[in-house]
Length: 270
Image (tube, rainbow, N blue to C red):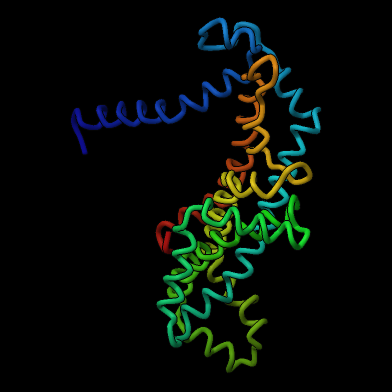
């Protein structure tokens, strides 16, 4: 591409990136302002720079425990989902059995269903067995959606691994667990990274189930952010700071698995 088209393309890309970054910049801008300045003036940058909003979140247990709770159940869910999905995806990629395609489709239909459909059954089930308001309750609830997604992603990667590798390993005396961990999993490391990334992100941003199944001990940051209105109104600065800090874990996960994600779009079923 030569001539005047290239500068025009660059201008379009710059404008597009600015459009994407504007909400994040405005969120950061609000987080560094006082509530009075946010409500009474329209400024492109803080006139009276303050870090008090972040100080409130990092020193108030009602705020920072929301991040701790979210990270705990999201990590538990990611580990559970990938652990369960690995053998299931291997079975779908390597064996043909009665109803395999129907079962695979049924798994995906769980991901298509809205969380509201399962909120009441999960609430009654966990209340009856004593799991209500625990991290494991939310983690297990999210596996209903993340395990099918992880199976679907991993199965695409596993189909790209020749079956001859399995047979050669068995001839060399490898047991299945040893072969799966030592040989097969490194071959699909990109797929595991992609599956873990999507499980983390979907569990991190999900609100309905995590809010329904928790009250105090395991309440996530997303639920806390929806209950910020008090007698004096909404503290917009603290809410904006909480939003900025909520973006950080997702950005860190993207940074760590960025190479896996790129390979996933090129090779896997993403």
